[in-house]
Figure (cartoon, rainbow over the protein chains, first blue to last red):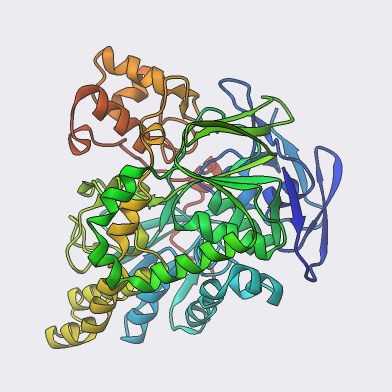
Length: 90
Length: 464
């Protein structure tokens, strides 16, 4: 998936995904920031093991699950902040 | 427990219209929304959008600013970034915010949780790189991001709006693959008179189509046998193939944006076991409502797309009507006030919905999406295919709830949001039953995933 960033002033926000530093913009959901950085696959389906990524971006499809602070959360419902530590689900 | 006259769930156009009207009439009102600001999905991010975004997204989107400002300045309590996960028919609403849960009580509940994208089960739709048209708009609205190397596939006014927005953002879609059939066109002519009543919508549509034509975007019509192709691994989507006017077409791309209209989000109304009925034209279930949006449970009202798909402007009118109905029910306004206040919104609602039957017929989802081929995954979460559901039907499974027992369909984290309608459709077709007779999944709280910590923390002290 290729995403283009539109013109406009947005502060850079730096966070980590599986130990890798990622730069997003203020206002991005975690899912959006990951997609913008080419991270289209966020995990694997528990039943089939198939790669899955965000689908609805509005908190209803549960395809964008990640782990923050030992809790499974929807990446599209999390606003990125500096220093956020995110782990992909196994 | 903190008690309100009216609790409005959802701060989209219907919710904001209902809440602000009610609070202006002196009711104690609370609004609860998952996002940090009002606007719902349609006006998502409108107050923080920069001028370039507003230009790209168009005047309808920008007009949402007023609504959101009205919410902020209204005399009511706005629980923001709060996720509702239980609503009882006595009016108790349980929501989580910042890791802990709270309960509030409403004498009346107005549900305005809007719509979901209809799921579009086609082979390959679960691959990374496949998203809804709405998701692409959320990227543009909230993050100023626009997909590149993308094909839009489906039907509905949003297909053209999205294409026009992507053109304005200088990232036009590779092509638009349109599924409406000739039968759709023929069926739609029956509703032409109503369409003329709502012609302002049609005129907008024409303008979008000419933008798309001027940009030279290829439109493939009468598309069928849609398959999204690609590697199942990290690479995700590689292309989409289909038949268009008897020609086989293969379009390489890295993003597929699917859309087949939106449907009412019935999670809360189902959890409350309210009466629902099948709408043959919109091809979905709707809560049964009176003219004020009151459901089969006295204290529960529904407004906006949550009730019936009509769009953002219709949602405002419907929100007002439900607030008026609620105020009257609470004894805060007299019969005569109720009647005089409701005249304008009711008439406006009628006009706004005038073209709806025409649009519903014209953009009706194709059979291959409503009743997919055997190989197609229907339940994304539990990986249950259409063929699996048909097999359960032949083994004696007559309803969606039984499919849960047969193969876990509907039991994954999305709680049936993206498979319910398809499962109902397949079972109705297999058994020759009506959709109403087949019914839909039984939905139970928690309506969103919560941690045990949140449940344990339920407090009656509401957050500031």
